[in-house]
Length: 447
Image (cartoon, rainbow, N blue to C red; front, side, top):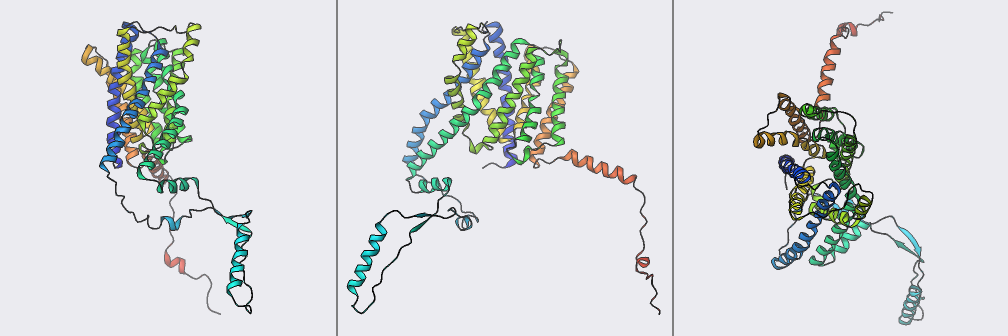
């Protein structure tokens, strides 16, 4: 079990690795759109999202093999006893409030008569006839659904309980994936359309506003105590957006509110909604099976979104066209690495850290992409790029330190200290009265 600091370091490392993969995937997407002449945003998004169902195929192959290995080994894990375990069942009532229902069966009455006859037959004639009277009302107490399920699993064999737990996990994960697959697809499709309609620098700048949506929505729908809105988080998000503005300023030629900008804004909102609600549904990485979750996301998209092809084709928004062998190879490689692998790693990194850190880490794609151009294409960049990269890294570091220190708000505390010191200078001097003067009697004791 990893500690908080270890989870934080591992999560940030995974997010930086995902940024590198996404930068490479973006270059491959540009090559597919322009050089390979396959400019089909919906087809690419649908194909790459449907590739998530590969996880279900892998799980279906590995699950029987894993179960057979566990059966052959026959090893059982010993649970460590905690101090709270001894008093768990004594401190918590497992049954609900009593309810009384009438007894409809005549079995008790016949039993009572039989017992009475037996007693009278064995006793002497002088003894009085004794009988047992049962109450006509029965007391009923019900267990909670969760405890009843645990009690049922406890009475089953080890292999049977594992199968039932796996079925429950699959059913719950499938329902969660159905709720969020449309949010994920809409966010990615709007981003692909925005890239097609407007310049990359402007779309990247607008997409960075997802961190602002994250802190607002996480404050309204918190999944943990650290999701509350603080002044330090607002400053960190402002630093992040300011760094993105400084980097992309030289590449912005037309800052009008175009359709691409609106689509990028919608994409940022849906992406933030997807991440916040998934994190709220399963607030830790132990409570969600990430490969299984994305596998069901791909399956639901594959089953539910194929009719949109006909709508886009007949309205001539995007004509349906089957890619050739070269285009399919690029699309498959991009989907396998840039979507199937990278998205699962990114969500895992968000669970290890926080949704805000995951969103701020996405902004690192901009300086990484420019470093990629400098190293491979030898393209020069101005000083504003290097100056703008500093607040992006500082914002990520600041939020990571906040999470490390139980999400405190150091800037607010600093402003309070400064305010108290400034206000203390303008306070009037208070004259303290000596203790002797306070103890002096104002009324004479003499008669």
